[in-house]
Length: 333
Ligand code: AHG
Ligand code: MN
Ligand code: MN
Ligand code: MN
Image 1 (cartoon, rainbow, N blue to C red):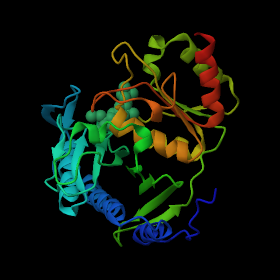
Image 2: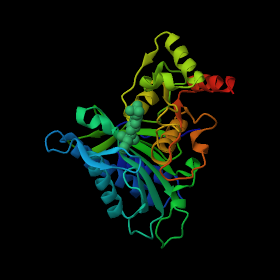
Image 3: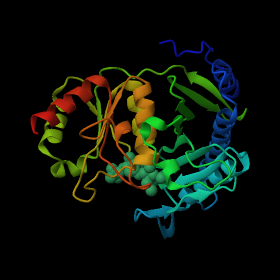
Image 4: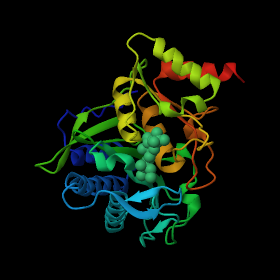
């Protein structure tokens, strides 16, 4: 299981992508180019975010997305920037975005890939200078080359992702992704405008002390979930950590170990997080790093998708905590 390409920390993302492509001779380079396009889009979004407080692009836009959430100005700016980069890059035929009801046709009908994305994750944290992110998920299209993208291109299931990852605009900006051969993280160096390999072959700790859940909903959780949280609290050194930016909460737990929970609530009976552009990609990353994902019955990657904007119950975490969680849920069945 030698996933490591043996490239030293400090390798640029471009070089890493090239090397990865050489290691898989059948790869034609289109996926590599697409990953570069995503990195470019993230640099542009990073720039916008960094000056957000200065140029009146914080705050609400006054519109709602299909989920009934108030769209923030930066949600839309990130959305537009991302779409533009993927249209210009030419490798993508269709885009599914949290901020658009329908699939976006790029016009690149000969392209082989489609991308599902959460252009800006953590909207509620934009105005208060707290970490936000971008999540992406890539599939090879199933519709014929030469035609527009269709919903089936996006409804293939989590196991069909060819690559997925996220960018966290945090105390530094980092891009973390997988192509199914382990997980690697690249930190952005502002003055050079380059991502450098900083977290090679990430492995999630098998045991963690952090639990991340919006505890304001505690009373709405089912007994197995309540019990799980109460048991976590009893563990020595246990910590509660919850930013409310999924990417930030996920990234911390991936590196430090622990568990992220978004159980059903009164308002969100199916959970809140979106399957195609939040849960599948993070489930792919966490499972590639040796952690587990779960929706209450199965790995998130095994959920059969029905709807491009559907939500699902989300548990993501270290092996040890996830097996306890599963035991609890089983006990009550
Ligand atoms: P988005 O900003 O992309 O709409 O995602 C919001 C999500 C996620 O980032 C976060 O973890 C979660 O909503 C927080 O939900 P609660 O405020 O209900 O805890
Ligand atoms: Mn939103
Ligand atoms: Mn989100
Ligand atoms: Mn979002």
